[in-house]
Length: 294
Image (cartoon, rainbow, N blue to C red; front, side, top):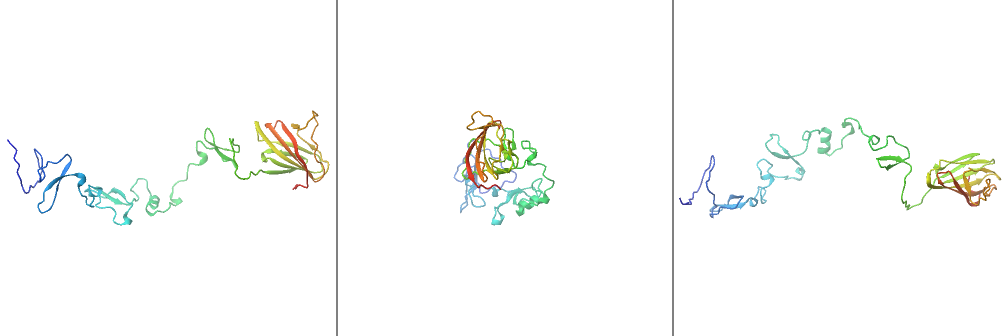
């Protein structure tokens, strides 16, 4: 049987429409895939096939937007104070709404956190339950105890305190200041950990000198300056027997001649490269007058 078109002004559908064929718009066009029929309006309204993206939303924009859906808000914020809201399920659990984030919206939130989010306030420490259980010293790769005056450095296994660092190159853009230590007495031990510049103030009796706690290990070089100042004349010094003096002629008792007059000072320099087992000693300059001794 040949197909014959027919026209009607109105079709009311109550329980469903079963078509064994196709629909055409007012111009007899069957449309393309995924198109929809819309009313064209006007004096003689017809229907026409259009792409879904060509539909006009409730907001007047082209296409279907979030607010065009049946279970979403009908509009976005109309007032600046309504901006920055969250999307959440309404109380009837049958649609979505725009609202602020409050206590109970996220599991684990308490009143203190809600106060922070909603009112932009800080959380009082008293509202935080329990004391912290972790500290810097309690971590798996940190020291077990603090060490006063030490520096933190990275190691192969973590972080540790130290007062010794190996630096490939040190560039100082300002002055380099060294600690100065003054010693006196008949038995003086120069603690070389104190710095690199010392003054030995001689009294009226013979003074014995020892070098202790050399900061350098074997294979490392260390040097210090010693200013020897006389407050009395002709005072003798007993030096460590580990010193090799510049100008030594092979005499085991050889010591360079120094200035022994009252009020005079000489400057000595001592260097080691074997951890303090051997010291190279020399008078760098001598005969300074009236240097401070206190």
